[in-house]
Image 1: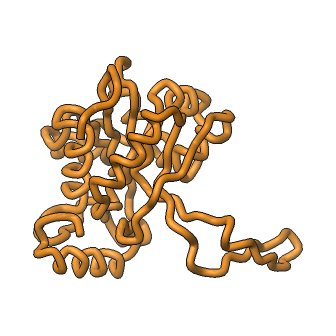
Image 2 (image 1 turned 180 degrees about the horizontal axis):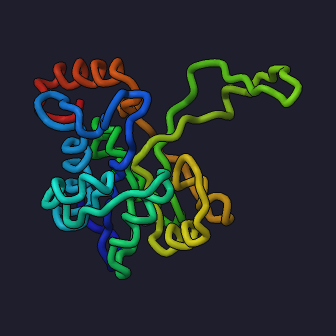
Length: 225
C-alpha cells in the first residue's frame, strides 16, 4: 500500500511470550509448514515495508532470530515491556507505529490498511474490533453478576496503529495493559475502531492452532484466508 505519511510506517511484531496456556512458544509452532511468527512478519512487511519491521522475541532467542526482521530485540517480563523494547528500536523519524501480536498469524492486508488509514485521517490510534457474540457478565465485589449490554461491547484485535509520538508518550510512564490502545486511551488520546476480522484468530491453545491450520487449508495454505 502507498505510505500516506511524510515519514515511514513501522511495525513492531511482538513474539516474546512464553505461551504458558499453549504449552510452549506458540509463536514458533509450525502452521501450514511455516512458523506462526513468519505469517505475522509477512503481513507486517506487506503493510509497512520490507525494512520497517522490528521483531521482539524472548531474550534467549535473539541470536537465533537475527535476520528475520529489520531489527530483532529482546522482550521483557510483560507484553507492555516487550512493546517498549520494540518501540525503542523504531527510528525517531517514524510517523506511525503498528503493533501486532505474532500470535495472530491470519491478519489480512485490509485489516492493516484500515488502521493505518484511520491514523492518516487524524486519529491518534486505531484498533480493529469485532462485535461480541456471547452474553458478557461482570462479577461484582460481592460475587453478584451484572449483564453488560452486548451492543456496547467490542472485542479488540491487532494490528493496532498509532501516531508514533503518541505511542511513545503512552509508554513513557512504564504502565502495563493488555494492549497498547489501553495505555493510549488512558492519556486522553483519541482511539477509534476499524472493522476487525472474525478470522483473525489469536492462538492461545493447541485448538486455536488446529483452527488456523484448517483456515489456511481452505486457501491452499499459501496465504492468509
